[in-house]
Amino acid sequence: MIYFLIGFMGAGKSTIAKQLSERTDIPSLDLDKLIEQKYGKAVQDLFREEGEEWFRKAESEVLRTIESESDLVVACGGGTPCFGDNMKWMNEKGETWYLRLSVGELLRRLDPEQISSRPLMKGLRPEEIKRVLEEMLISRERYYLQATRVISEENCHARYLERYLKPEIR
Image (tube, rainbow, N blue to C red; front, side, top):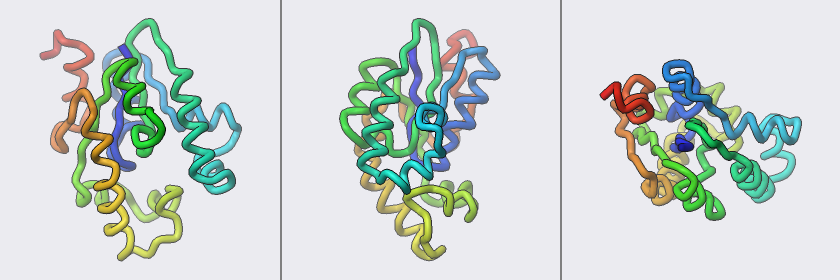
């Protein structure tokens, strides 16, 4: 089974995927890292140089190369489920887990340096960031809520999620 971790930037998808892998011995992949390996550039650079439309097509192509005969945890980019038919494809290939955090918690987790490195936040003034986060989260949530599991903010950590990977932990 492939477990796709989805949610907004800063939700902890990459961190949790890595922790789940360490705690359960189930391998994990980071979609952004796969994209960077394929194209030899950082996601931020690809996004800036090629544009969002190109990036989303490339992201979908790389996503569709992920296959596994055994369990696998995949950390997806924040926009992955929202473009093409990626959400449908992921739900057909495995389970999708939406790490659902409030805007307040996302702001707390994203320090100014992280925000400025994110392609869709680059160059924003501090007062604009909260408004943009709220707008983006509202527009993306209709995709995120198609997830197999919606994980509440207080449960967005590997210790809680590993019970779904290893039922004997329940």
